[in-house]
Length: 34
Picture 1 (tube, rainbow, N blue to C red):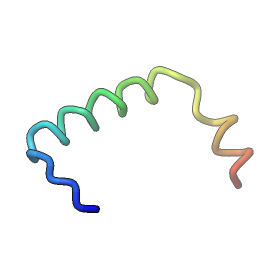
Picture 2: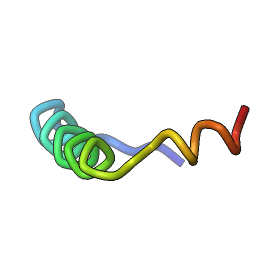
Picture 3: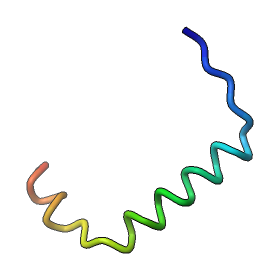
Picture 4: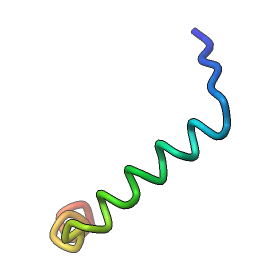
């Protein structure tokens, strides 16, 4: 299976996800993973 995405769309989506993750407290998640 091959997926083709436009770079701008991908970067925009990643930007939204990154902002949502930044808003939350990620330290408990990281401590559980480590």
